[in-house]
Length: 340
Image 1 (cartoon, rainbow, N blue to C red):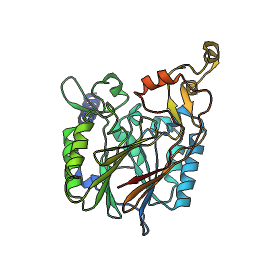
Image 2: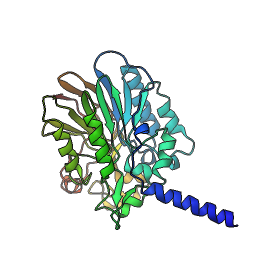
Image 3: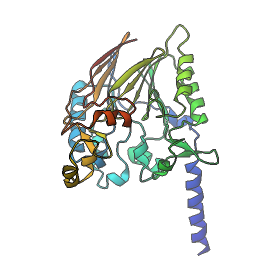
Image 4: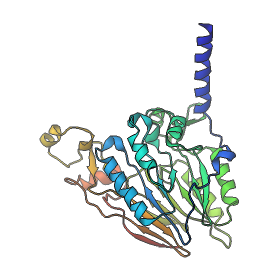
């Protein structure tokens, strides 16, 4: 009995330590691609916010993405979070589908990936060793960040786990100082250009609470002869937006599936809405699987997206604009040619 109590205490203590652990193991944070890449420009495919728990056709949407990635012979694929957690994939078919891609695969942690479990459980399930990491491909350093922390009442940085972040809206999405120091070092040691990937936005106010500090760090490295940080990619907002802030592109990749409304917002009459069921009644579904092909050329960043349409009626656009702070509603990822 004493042994069981000691074992239980040890497990609780270990989980508590992991909850407040913000350190980055440098031996795990440098990643090598498993497959060789060909010559030419860096080319990859990106997808965001698949959310299989919200849609019945998530496997078909992933199929469309993976088929195109095979056809395009990209150097790697990357998903930008809100992908899938073990509780949502009891048979393992979703992660198996992703892993069926024969090329290089990269992951970014999203907030909803820790709704029913710990960050460590999700990482093990996906097969990644570090929540933050970098990989060098064709002379470009790709850096993956993890903003999935909040600051508690004792001023401690806490990892997202089992939906604990919902009660901390004022501080959730804050990158810890240890991660900022690691980011600074990783950029400083990069010999070529840098692209950054995160689930939450580094440009949209409030998405990452200390985003201005991160952008200032990037801009410090762009003051010399060489412009190091060229672009940042994120998901999370389910929007199609690209903006240039002080010479750096911040590109928001739309969800492959839907936009969240959380209510009717003028789409249906009260009677029609009351007769709908399931989660999809609170979503604006897209008729196509959205993703993007990205090519980094010498002087341009070229993005080839997918044009789609909204399924069903539009919401009250004035109310929608208030909900998303003016971000546009779109069922597409538009083509973009961004001069570097």
